Structures are given as C-alpha cells and as structure tokens.
Amino acid sequence: MNKLKTTIINYLINLSLLSITWGGLFRRSFNCDTIFHVIAQKEDIYTQIEDARYLCAGLDYLLYRMGINATDHTGVTILISLCILAAGVCLVQETFRHYLSLGAMWEKVKFLAITNLLFINVLFSEVLMFCECALAFALAYALAALGGYLFKRKKYIPVLIVMLCSVSFYQVGVVLGAILIAGIIFFDHFPYKEKLNINQIIIRGIIGGICTFGMGLLNMLSSRLLVWLGAIPELRKVPQTAGNGEKIKMVFSYFVALLKDSRSLLPSVWLPLLIIAVCVVVIVADTIKEKNWKRLFGILSFYVMMNVMIFIIPFMTKEVNTSPRIIFPFYTALSMLLLMTFQGTGSMGKKIIAGAGLFFFFIQIIISQMIISDHLLSNKLDILYANMAYHKIKDYEETTGTTVEYLAVTRDIDWSPFYQEIKYHTDQINERALGQVTNTLMNVMTEGDFIKLEMDEEIYNQYFKDKNWDYFDLDEQMIIVGNTAYWVIF
Image (cartoon, rainbow, N blue to C red; front, side, top):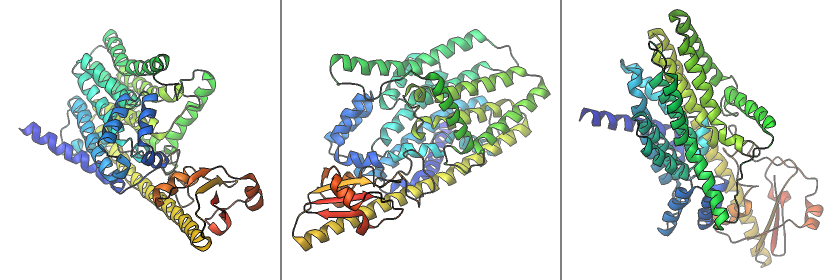
C-alpha cells in the first residue's frame, strides 16, 4: 500500500511539473500542420501510413470514425498527452531509482527534476505544438519508457513488442528507448568496485540494439514492402546515405548549436555545455581521488554513444533533419549523464550534480513557458491578420456586390517564417501560419470557402513587384479584382 501511495504521489508530482511547464497549451493553439489537419483529417491518416506510423494512423482513424478531431479540442488533447507522459516519467524513475540509493529528501527532489528533463526541455516544446499528433507522440515515448523498464527486468520479448509499438506511433521513440537502455546497461555492468564483464556488456548491448534500432529497421522495411505490394505509391521520406562526409560536418555543427543554446531556444551562454563540464569535473576529481579509471571511461564512452544515437535518424535524411521534435533526446542523454555522475560520486559531488541538475531544470521550465507564450502570441497574430483580410474582402463584396471566390497568395522579397514580435523560435517552433498555409488559415479561422489560386503575374508586376514590407498593411498588400483577392504576405 505504501508503494502504491508513493507511486501515485510521484505521478501527481510529475503531472504537475508537466502541467506547470506546458499548461499554456491547454488553450487552443496550432501550427501549420495543425491548420491543415483541421480540414484534412482523413488525408492525414493516409499520410501516417505512408510514413510507417501505423498505430498513429490507427489512432487517427479511430478518432475520425468517432467524429473527433484532435485539433478542435487541443486543450483536452494536450492534457491527455501530459497524463501519458507523466506515466512515462514514472516508469523511468522506477527504472533508475534503485541504482542511486536516494537518501535525503533533497536527493529525491533533485532526482525528480533530473528525470523530468526528458519531457521538460525547450526542444520538447515542438512535440506538443503538433496538437494533432500529440497523443501519438506521447504514447510512443511512454512505450519507450516502458521498454526500458522491461529491459531492466530482462524481459526481452515484451521489450521487442513494446518498442515495435513505439516506433509504429513515431520513430523517434526508438532513440529515446535506446538511450534509456544504454543507461540501464551502464548501471548494471559498471559496479565500480568490481571487475567489468565486457562480454555481458556487449551481449546486452546487442540485445538492446535489436530491441530498439532493430525495430526501427523493421518499421522502415515494412514501408518498402507496402510500396512493393502496391498499397502505397511511394515512400514520402526515403533514407539517404550519400554525402556522409558532409553530413558528419552538419551533425557536428548542429551538436555545437545544441551545446551553445539548444538551437537558439536558450540564452547563448553555452549552458548545456556548462552542465556537461560540471559533470566531467566531478568525474575527473573522483577518478583522481579513487584511482578508478573505468568509471571515467564508462561514463564518457556511454555518454558519447548516447549522443551518437540522437543523430542516427537525422543522419539518414537527405538534409540531416534536426528538428527539435527529433533531437529532443539530447536532454535524455544529458539526464542520463547527470544520473551516471551522481551514482558513484561522494557527498560533495552529489550536492554539486544535484544542484546543477535542479538549476538546469528550472531554467528549462522558465524558458519553455516563454516559448509557449510566444507561440500563443504568434497564433493570435495569425488569427488577427486573417480576420482583417476577411473583413476587407467582405467590405469589398458589400460595396461592389461581387462575391470573392478565389484567393491568390504569395510572399514579399524578404518574408520571414516568424513574426518579429516572437523571440523564441526555430524550425517549426513558433512558426507563423500566415505565408505558409494562408488559404487554409483563412478558411479555418473565418469559416470562408476561398479557392486557392496562383498569383497572377500581370497583377503581381503591376501592384507588388520589388515590394518588401516589415509590417502588415492590407491597403498596400491586398488587391481585389473581380472575384479574386490577390495578397502578398509581408
């Protein structure tokens, strides 16, 4: 009974921390893909099948048949997703708690903070901005955490099944699972006072690789089988192996960007690198004191391996796709580094690592809330500008008696995918819909029914050519001729 009570308390703490960080998304929000999903829920199901996310497609289909669109209830969607993620964090905590011999209350508090870094970090914000996929993402990562929990208990067949399900929701689940399993192997086979059993480490490493990346390979081959069978016409995303030398350079540059400011989402003071440096200093100091070089070798080699895992999926893409929703396991690896360092160090080292982890965790909460605040502001500007354009069109219709049926949109010379008012942005984090899915945005937000039309070259040359704005002004940026509105997005 005491264990059940402790588990419930831990779950509620994890859910509270997640809600404090991401609670701003309980309000309705969207990004470009979300806007498209509003009117193309059925088409997105087929897209998920093409991407080999079969369980994600199944979940979408179930919601579709029930008449539920996740984009209509984004607050509820995010809340359920956070409930699932909180369960995932509990599984991770249960997996690693027994390795650390947590004593004082402050050690337990900082353990909760360090393990919550998995889903409370600035990169993870992009995951939740895909409201239409948030449930599938959450299930993928909770299943990955379950896979680690089962791996620790050497239940390898269930691990295979769980990880196969995880990758069928979203492929990044295998990366999260692989990093957690690497952490388990480290804790199981690096007892600092005993001799290392290299053979066991290699065997369990191979098993862990089969359970995670092996399932990812099986998932990839299944999509090729569907193409061969004619079930889908072609793969939307084909793995690319050419240009590996250039890709390695790109991966290195992206990793440096993560160390500096997490792709412009943290202050540019190299905070992640500082946390790593603190861990290395503590490890080296303990190594010099205890003459235990295998600890230094073990922690650093496992941490390097975890970071290599992060870039396996991006490396297989043509342009090395390092979207935050793909590389957020960078923080999983950092969490593992903090735990690995914490385990074998003395009381002073534990205080340093716990303090550094807690400080870093609070920074993530604060900046993540700012990111969400910017996200809601970007959404408000999208809605405001779409409504202003709609009212101009309605005024034209009332004045002329002509119904505007078509909307032709293009962008000015120096168009930006983010509003100037938005400080925290990268890739699809806080992207603006205006200028990317303008026609869909107009139809969704105004309940209009405008037909998309390509910009007329003659109209463009007459009214918009060589124009470049850094402000919104419909008098200059929209021209209505007959039944067509021509709009250049600043």
